Length: 239
Image (tube, rainbow, N blue to C red):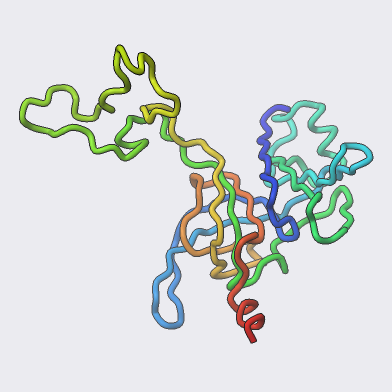
């Protein structure tokens, strides 16, 4: 569909709170106690609903949403015709949020906007899905953290090699899943249980503690954590 990026979400996500955005970069925050926290700054939303999928028409419940903006001439006419129904411009990225396991039956309409306001709060835990930085073809020392060979006592041109991968008589082949050099990075990865440090809905910014997968300006998907809840909720439960 032209210069349009697609991103698929994984099943099992907490769809009650989910939004697409981009990674701006990393920074740091000082707490009231003077502690320095490394944080990742995310720009989340607004997401525009471009299509509502139903069980009757598509076999499952989902919403197709767009994020970002770009010129219409960069897309095919078919894509422009489909995305123009929302009357919110042409998105740079199109993704999908499954609603099969959503706890609520909230109804969406084409053109609705999903914003950061009221979605997450300070102290909440989120899961962030992104595409890791591509490293190209990497050797065994970088890809699998192998030690390599001694750098002295007669070692020649073998410092970063992976060593033996089999034998001629037995096994007579290379075992499956043998750790070797190869393509590294560009994998879809989810970082779980990241704590929200600050929410700035007027700027569409979310600051979370720690790092997340992906390069700067890469597309990310943020949803409520499915394995962990905020500490304030845990304290109430204990009482």
